[in-house]
Image (cartoon, rainbow, N blue to C red; front, side):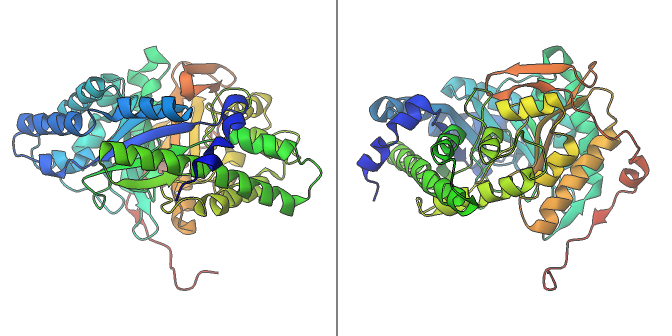
Length: 451
């Protein structure tokens, strides 16, 4: 049972250390919206979303006021649209426009699920929907897209990897007049979770309930402040402090999730206890790593420090909630983290080091700005590398690259808000085109002889 007094102990964290609930995300199944006529299907989609999420934003605002807990975003995730589109055909962008209209009607910040799951191959409608992503993200403001191209059990669909390199580049190009914002709303996954409340990768998995509430917490600033108060402890002590802090943060998330579930009469799904940074000073995962003793994020020791952080966050959080899920751990999105931005600008943090860090963090190569002249094949190769880490290590990995059209290494993109800003990072310019052009599928790793 949640003890409200435990939550009130976090008041100084909220006021002084940027503690917040990053998102309340309502997951909505659209499987019962399928119809052979696309216009009828779209009408059903709009009606269901607006009916289920009618009170989502107001409920979040009411909980904020009553408990004094900032809830930054209210979001919706839906069944991967490729599944709904398969029943009707036509122009898939109609679904994107419908989702945009519905998101505006209920007032949410983002809606995720313009997605396809193609880790083992393409089903009916998958290719058409994927090819429509650039247009869909260019004509909408609130819609996010994701494509799962690999898994530990299925291997990696290299035909999908090749296609997604082209789609990421095209999405950046068609939104170049808006700082390539379309690519910032597109994630390529390996081992995508069905209950992730965080954008841009959220979708409502086919095995989920008809409607559910998932909550994503945050609090990098709180963890850093706790470490700063105990600067002389050893590494074991560091892990213990992080666990205790993560417990308190997650209890707050559990409270909000339970309240939202009760008030909306919707089942409580999970708390995602990820440390999600922002560009605000004092709200950085990189700064936690530096508080442990690194001069700057990206230097030698960064991967070890991140591994400790990720594990301790999960150990502390899992004791605080009966249902932990989503991604859960530490995020390292470059443009969304003030410390990561500074490290990238100084050259301490490079893409190769980030790739090593993704082997032990919650997600992957996230919100990384790359030169505008990057080739689709190079984007695909980066996706393949990251997917391989996820596949072999049985963890979720993802890639969210933003090709900065017309910009070169050292120049910057600025998205504003939670998406932040960041420098164009250098990439290896040697070609991977022949490797990507082979297509086919990388076989799933053997499980019984792992060592």
